[in-house]
Image 1 (cartoon, one colour):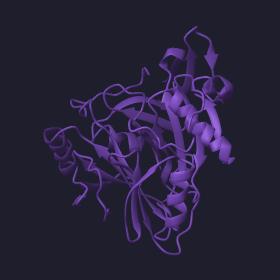
Image 2 (tube, rainbow, N blue to C red):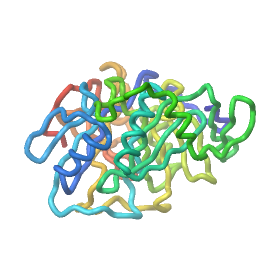
Image 3 (cartoon, rainbow, N blue to C red):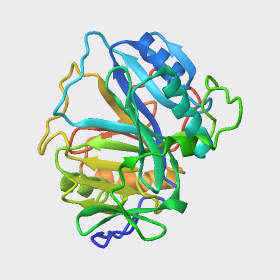
Image 4 (spheres, one colour):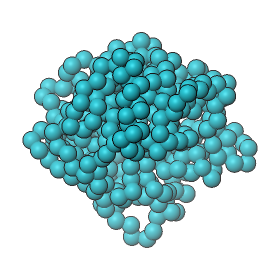
Length: 311
């Protein structure tokens, strides 16, 4: 994704930086565990009281903490969606076929450079399931607009209906739709509602050191990443300019995790956080900070296979 508006800094976050687990506050732990196991194909890694960790069998991808009497709010900052990246079209096809078999509402979409479907979990937390398909084309944020081009040069709006029948041709005969998601599955990106896109870019780019892959004023969104990926973080104001953080009794994002490849890379980011006088707290999972929209972030270098008692 090229970006003619990209600003530069004297530093960049380590190119091997990626996304670790996402933690959600939920109102109904049992129902959410069942959803992620049955509809999403996640494995239950651990359960401890009102908390649980799920994923593909290795490090947690998702952590759930039940809090009583919680509800979903609109018009606030927080999570737009967690995007789970599958290793290939076959595995995405299996995930999609599982949703179709369960008749669970979802929206298969062709972003050209990625194939995807969108859905919400039982409590309205957004989910994207996708695989990379750069051989089909690219998408860019150019001149303040979001643009998509196929490899033949033709234009796409990047939000076409996915050719599901074609995707299903990548499945083998007698695929087990109740099989767990493959161990290679990971969080490809996290997309956030923020109160101001420029403010968020200044934080994630100007302090943490992510590269700006594009800012689309008309789209009210920006993409940032490490190492040239199309985006590790999406930032948008689709819940309203100046949106407030969710109230204390909200379900939704508890924190998301930015995972650095080594301690030196983490220390460089922490040094910039400290220089900017951003409040931080050390937790069992890593260093907890907030972006300007009060989205909680964990900075860490490792992804333990199981770690109950998350914050």
